[in-house]
Image (cartoon, rainbow, N blue to C red; front, side, top):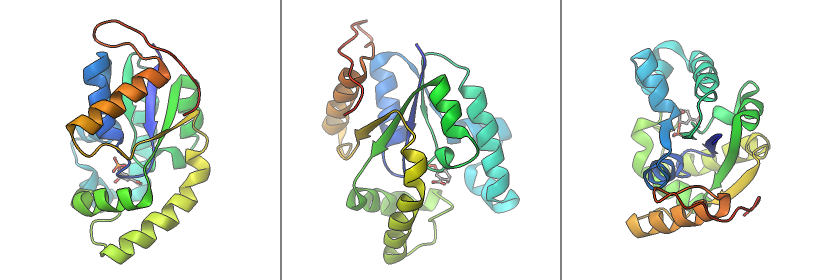
Length: 189
Ligand code: S3P
């Protein structure tokens, strides 16, 4: 089957949901940031620090084109992937794009905990993070809005919520499961 691209803001759950979906469906999981890190033997923080954001976006663009050729994969993009070059068009022609939407308080909570590994927000205070989330969401919404689907990803806080969200996703998009059963299909959630 065609690739599934999970897009959305940092902290919306792309990697958490993607990994759990892969385990249940048997599809392969690709985290685009990890793919870039492996290919260039450098972590994202160091690429930002030593080469700058522009160089990172170019690497991200090129690696996205590479993974877009794969089938039977779930790709968790970076939060900025949809907002540069014609990346959304590339994803829309290669497969199914799903914008994971988490509410602002949920994003804030998740990002406060995991900010150290994200160069764009690593040194922000709580208030700065709040403003950053609001401003960036507004700027990025036109790009995210080019996705074919939207899906609420607020409920990913523990194992049982993740499993419940996986089941809802599989059912919504008619994905196979390891047991080989395909479920219903609908376009928007
Ligand atoms: C970024 C999000 C990050 C990573 C990089 C830039 C962004 O990915 O690609 O730090 O511009 O929003 P996650 O969304 O997986 O944190």
